[in-house]
Image (tube, rainbow, N blue to C red; front, side):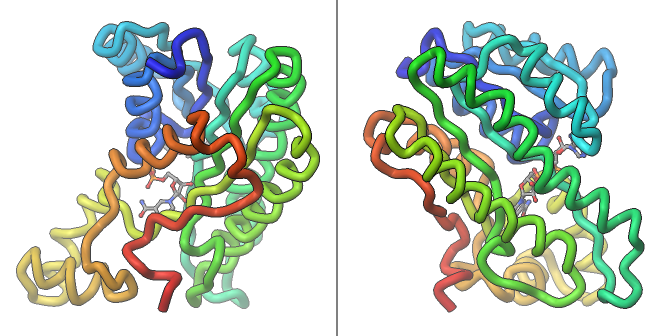
Length: 257
Ligand code: NAD
């Protein structure tokens, strides 16, 4: 229960990696604030269930992180932020000369700028509490590129740069800022793509995962949301107090290639 009494805000956490990270932090006693852009009864029920399961306070605060004011007010509404996990992200795939401008702007806003806005409000809270951890969920695409994902890759490289800058600005304080760079992670979104890929390639599940989806991931295994949760817990632990301004790849060897 190393995070008892601490509050963690996890952006984009009503599914996938964000929800997995929230569960891992709650399992260590953190009170958690879940977030996404929707404001449905099931979003609030998800937080209530998580709180009951781990015996912590869990709230859901809706905020569309494409909007700078909403990103800032998410942290203001939470009222306290000891651990900030910037996780919300979207993707769009198209060549640069055909990339829709509105998609570019939205990806930069959600995947990069929202992390600047939340950190700007969270840092004074961390300073007054005398402790803080920022964990940015970047990507293997924060360190390497692939064609047709220009906005996503620019945003994720930007997140890595923002991570280093915040780390330097807080270097003499008990605050750290790091980025996790996942390879392919088995989230519900990725799971849902498997049947289509099987059909398109005429392959069984194992073959399409190994030969198509995980072609660039040398381990030929997906990372899991539990592994990302565990890495986040580590970065927030006392053992990681001198780890700041860096990236940890959870990518089965992708960026070693
Ligand atoms: P996901 O779609 O399950 O989760 C994304 C979350 O962001 C959701 O909760 C979604 O509601 C939220 N979100 C989207 N737009 C938002 C907005 N405007 N305002 C607030 N919240 C918004 O996907 P995921 O795979 O869990 O991805 C989480 C993060 O991990 C993303 O930043 C993604 O780029 C990164 N990532 C994922 C993988 C992977 O293989 N799944 C690999 C590397 C990095």
